Image (cartoon, rainbow, N blue to C red; front, side, top):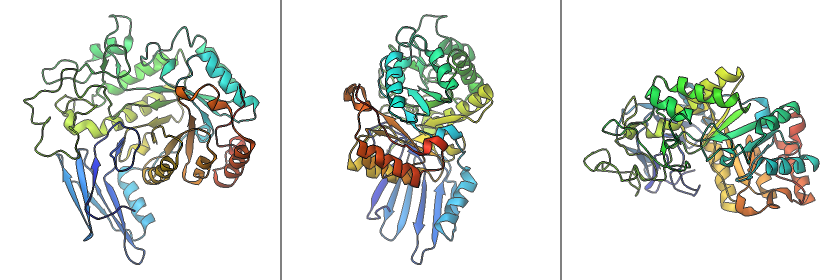
Length: 443
């Protein structure tokens, strides 16, 4: 339930730590109103521009949009379930993930090496944890560049993945939309191919936009609205998959996120798109993303920002389906209405406290209207397991600062809690039904 005492809600994809009452990674301009007597109606504004929705005690809702078409859909219900069905009839129904995607997923930020990854995985398995999927965060990459792996710290990664497959397990890696823009010519195909195909986002003068994400010097963003985007993305994924036989992708930083506010030297001051007369929230639009005047194939970033992650999800789905000839497993941090047909959504890393647990239930319930929601929880706190009925997919994730023992130590009481909840509230998952929590032994 949302308060209607002149409360504003902002729709503009942002990277930030999940906190209450702030716009985050996705934009889904839909409201559902439960009337007296139990009937319901809904209103969906199909618009990708930045907007504010003001809820008033009348009750009433005011939509303030910075551009685009006022493409409203009214859903008459009469039940809440009918409203959701009618909404999904417009934007598309969520795709079913692969069956193995419903199992237990193990991850950590930062393992630091393949040996450390193996050690923690085998300790979990030896403790009786039925791990279905092993993940690696950005530390598996060579200099944090997409479509590479570290030949020293992660030497033997292809063989490790083969072993996982031989045991019936699967392997997922993180990827970002931005690729390095500063490697020597001829040494990094994702950049060389992008230049040759003219695939990167441009500035107002037609030059490639050089931003900064995790890459050492600079980052460039593929334009996923470009007619050649799927061909380009498929080529990069096919090349990497021929080295490391990945089963799925975890897409991060695709709001899109940028360590600069626009460009390194700021955004064009003479562009009205950078400083419109009204801006939802108290942040400039270019805060930690691209300049609004940057150019995609279909329009300026001003109009494309909220669907950038959606377009990347479409390209990734088509690429993995083509390469693997199987149902893709994809989760995306940034989302837009209808994206569930192409990818799941992950809710961002969450700390272990009551507030995060409450937000987990709220956000999972709302985003599940249009996509399969994948919850990341940090820690093995047993109370996370009590939220399991609201979480179809989840992943145990741990930060490097939590120390080497954090991910491999838990009491028998939590193990019992996980068994009970896994058996009573989870979907039937064969051997993965028994345990849905982080557990291990002391190393």
